Length: 390
Ligand SMILES: Cc1cc2nc3c(=O)[nH]c(=O)nc-3n(C[C@H](O)[C@H](O)[C@H](O)COP(=O)(O)OP(=O)(O)OC[C@H]3O[C@@H](n4cnc5c(N)ncnc54)[C@H](O)[C@@H]3O)c2cc1C
Image 1 (cartoon, rainbow, N blue to C red):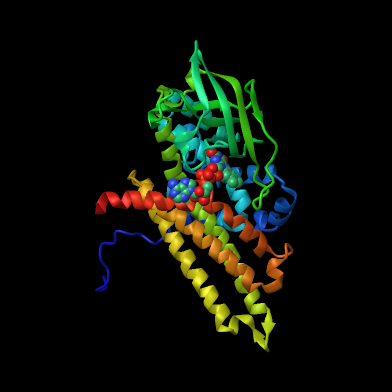
Image 2: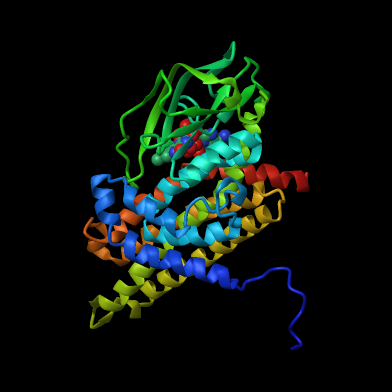
């Protein structure tokens, strides 16, 4: 034992299994995602076959417990795999990530029967979507107006949801609705709603700035009858906590998508910087460029460590609200900076859709908006820390 070896609380070595999983995800990103990302984005293609391949390889739905048909992997495994998916194509990472977002409330708060059926269906290949945001309520989740009223053996759901990822392909939705008129969070309840329910109408695909392969739509509920057994957890008033836990548990994954996309942009810019010559030498040899690349690398490393920390807390079953907000906010913000700098390194070619830099920059922006905006993450961070400093 050297004089520096001590009992370490933080483990930086990957296990053999993690090494293998990341290797698999890396090959998948290189062979299946990077060559197709441009076409999927340009034509708004939802890559069903590639999603199936990823599922068969064990790269999706990682944290669904084995007893419900999932892989039972750790949040850290999920983050590592998803960094590679984000590097390959952030649109693909979002497509596959939203299903997990809808599963988290069920894993956290569902009854055994709900878990067996709906998580099992996802593991068998179904898609689920998380239906919380409304035209008039995004950041302010408690302001949602969709209602669920118990009538006999059914709840009747009425209202509109907006910006629902995967809505056009989903088999079932996790829907947050108001079960009482009070304004407190105890008036919110979660429901599992079959996509083919009578009165459920999925809107047209939204034309987005980036990640155009991911399918984002509105969903309208016009007196949709849902059996009362589909109230998640079986108790009214538990929806707020389910929806918030889903955010805590999915933000490290979103962070890994953002930092993976940033890493892809950096790697592409790095290669270009060694190829492109100005004033008789590769642009990498201009310190302004190599320092920009060094800054990108530092930011990505930092974002990765924050994502690992949040995932590690989740794996230990500890409170991860603060760490998840730190991870998501930082990765989203540096993701935007890194991809913008990558466009700069490509010069005029960076502004062209012929090169990946522009697509990565467009794709990076959404991480500052969905899953809670960067401002909302700052709100969470300041509120959580103030509990200690007050
Ligand atoms: C492509 C895409 C996919 C999405 N996928 C899903 C999905 O699958 N499921 C789902 O439920 N939702 C989804 N969303 C919705 C997304 O989560 C919301 O857009 C987001 O939470 C912001 O809500 P908003 O758009 O209503 O903006 P608003 O809440 O109206 O915010 C507008 C601006 O004000 C800022 N702001 C608001 N309140 C505060 C405050 N208190 N302090 C400081 N600043 C504040 C925000 O940060 C933002 O900059 C998606 C959105 C997009 C664009």
